[in-house]
Length: 276
Image (tube, rainbow, N blue to C red; front, top):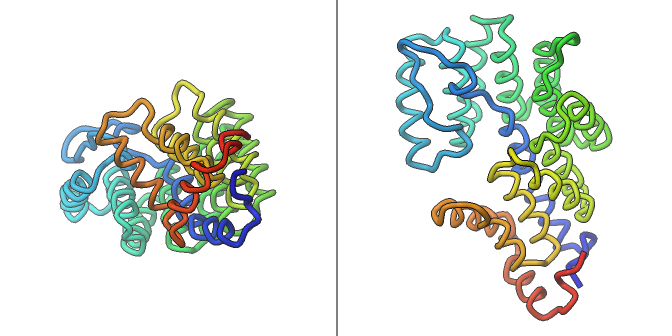
């Protein structure tokens, strides 16, 4: 049978993945230059920040950082630079950038949203909720901000409140895969892997689902001990290089206490391991 979510090994694995899961949820609603098309001296990002490999991320950070130095008040470039810094693990610097950009653009919703995400990444969770709340407009609510609130609430250990915010976001944007994925990961964080898988399968089945959604589904399946199926999901519909990156992500998430090898061995010896 698949490894139970109640085992000490599984609890340690869930704890080890918690922060990374929440950061993936927050990253899913980031702003890029593609969202707000500009011209002139603002460097254009060729792809979403979350889809860049290490070399692309390094090059983009250097290029956008130089533009930020020339004009630290620009909202679009400042948000892009902070997003690049966060994806590089430079959370404190990203927060410092967004503080300056928010001072210069106190009414810009995109700036406030990015500022809130930078605060969350730096561990300033209540401040992040307050900032994102200021960015929201009740008459035209932004589902991305509602979902980001849910991700922060999950990080604060308030899963019921988080899940309500995800459902509120789904009321605004039905069947949005990033919201369904966040909802599934909320259940993963509390060890309810089967419910997590249900939502993540629904998310992955949406036409606009991206690689990150499939990564999350692969993680939920892998945590239940179904290694071959998890790797198959991680490689689905991707170029070989992208597929290898997904599998590397999956292996990394399951690396605690040699858990990948243990789960693979469990899966290969159990005839019931491919059942839900």
